[in-house]
Image 1: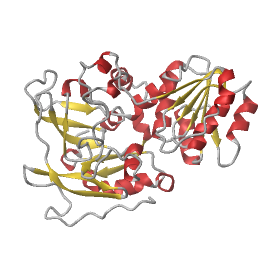
Image 2 (image 1 turned 90 degrees about the vertical axis):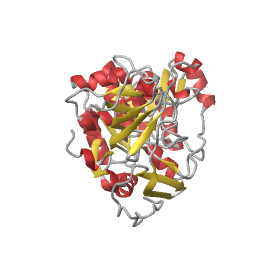
Image 3 (image 1 turned 120 degrees about the vertical axis):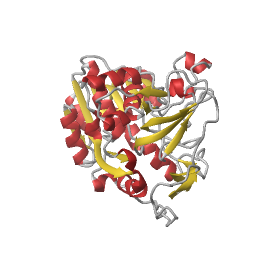
Image 4 (image 1 turned 60 degrees about the vertical axis):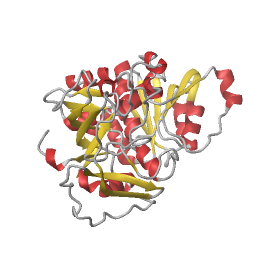
Length: 374
């Protein structure tokens, strides 16, 4: 990873979990390029709608790397990172109705009170007392314990016998790829679609796009290993944009471009590919998180009746996606390439931050207390 991270400090716990009831271990963001696995205060119930969850498994998101690289200045130093995971409820507030101590739950990356104007429109990502706050505005899931506000609307019960690694993917990447890429892109039966970026979000869009039976799915990336995986997961065509001109390739193989172009990276160059390959009447669905402005070719796009969408995941499709995982219709565990113990968090960040070199897609970090829980 080009940005350095702190080495694990030799605390009294010697890198293992804290033995006290008031402290725990967590991955703390100290500022750009500086994260640390250290003792932090154990969270407690603060509001009657809260739940305290003991983490079983968590993961690292590209958004977490963006925070580390200073891409998200709204994250303040001292914040425990992470917004994905599964766990066991340790305690609930007096107003929590749907969960109790000992329940096995999926933690949604989006917190929703269920009652505000945006929640009533199913725009949970914009909840007036929630949204994306875990590992962003409040302490997150890359720790032994996490406090979940509005637990009734922000947790999902875990069924017995389902691969727990797969369930972690339901916290964020599957609903993000599905909602912001596939649904916003209006993928329809018979469509030709292109997904630019074969990372976890692009692969999630690939898995869920197949619900709608597109005729062709192009996957575009620079990493040959990721393109090979995309082929296994259902891509009909792959293009290594480092070896050939992706725009020329697609325009030569289609009548006049793709029906849906899904941007799943967050770079100006990948957005540019999308706006050049989408056909008249088509959709450009931007999923990637952009840290820099893009050059919008509005002078060319307006006359082609192009629809451009973007957004923050709402997780309103998570219950449906959970059913597809339970049924075996999709197997998101196929995206997981590396496993670590929870207290190997810094090592996991190094591997995930050097994804191409390490051939990494998604990593799973497991609390040592649950290593045989699956």
